[in-house]
Length: 231
Image: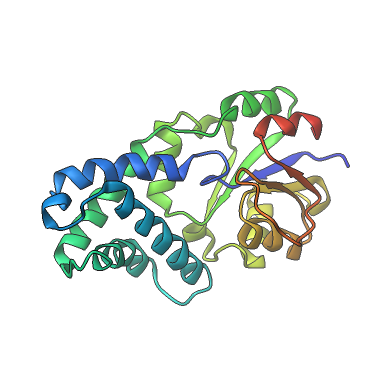
């Protein structure tokens, strides 16, 4: 297959969301004296945040909750697990989290090397992300990834979320790309892989966490360097 346009997901595929979120919340844990408020261990708090974040993102992508609810309720529910029913605290932490998170620079191993490799081989790179518009652009800015991508498609700009077919159609149109010359590269089976497959795209499942799935993407890799075996 002669691919020309490569559409990447950002969070959990190139930009290490878990590592960056952990660093950001570690600072907030101290700033807001959570230990004195009843959260005895930072690791316990972050585990609960990761759980609620994953669950609420799933509800957000399916249209059950709005963006603003996602932003603060993942913190609110995490605090409630430690019997801290403080809505103002949750909202203040949520604001600080989204202010500090995009400044983090942790990427998955070989991210810049593989992007350089692909650009040097004349592939046209784009992003399709469900992340918030301003937050995603700041992540790209601070991690020095912005220049690699011709089109940066966010769900806000597209008016649609992955896995909906419309966001992929929007991305193809923005990139002036044909389906048969394009491929989606991402870590999320539902949003990235099944969504792109439903839009008629070939797919590469970036399985960083060795997840088990019955879905059959066009390719599966476990490390970004393996893209060199495909392109």
